[in-house]
Length: 290
Image 1 (cartoon, helix red, strand yellow):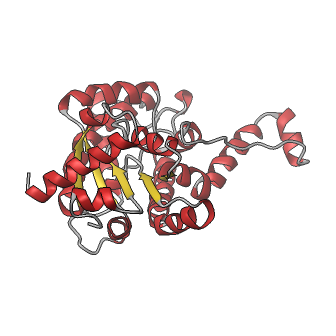
Image 2 (tube, rainbow, N blue to C red):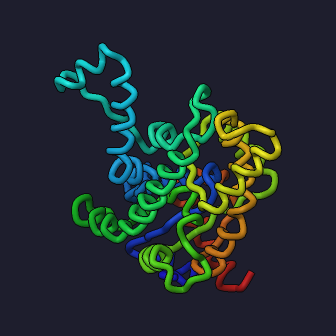
Image 3 (cartoon, rainbow, N blue to C red):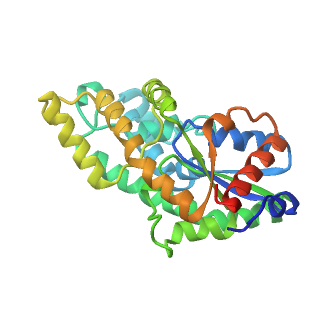
């Protein structure tokens, strides 16, 4: 780790940290607090995915839908209108909508093969966005004069890395350039996250083997064929299973590559000084073996 003790972290002239864990536990909350202080550059991995790596796919999908409407189709063909996503740090709906969910097309579902194709695009995009981190650290300092840097990672980081591989390229890049901090949720957070996901689905990235198992399990349980699956019902069921599937992977990332803070403590943070204290506490526990 680039900081071994609380003192090293507090005294560092350039603080660099990556928050990771399930979506909804506070990564963006902490990152926005640091950004609001005026002294931190906020690098959102999901934003980078949705703009640099998936933006063209998202926009093409929007245009494909618009071409179904004769009035809009004529305007598009003559470059009379512009159609594009307006993805922001706080609104990832264009990316979520593009990734979609498999199931009944009458309910907005995608054929499983198309969903898997889009998943593969997202995996590649997420890896590339994470590997872009050193470039953005340099860019933050060179262009904007920020010494402090926070990486707000996506909720599916654990799906694109191998925490037990000491040479994993993504984790090596993250740990060599930032302090990796896992936000660990408790059992009490699980239902809250599920309910939140059901109301506003976030971009989800699943390992192929997990997706296949979840899809087949859902069809066996419901007795539905591929074109009868309710996309939302499957999404919530898969997300619920993913929380349990991802927990040990995130724990391994923290054990081998970083430190841990509790989601309940994250929710008490109110300013950048609190964030500094939170991370210092995690380093103190790590140094003492707690």
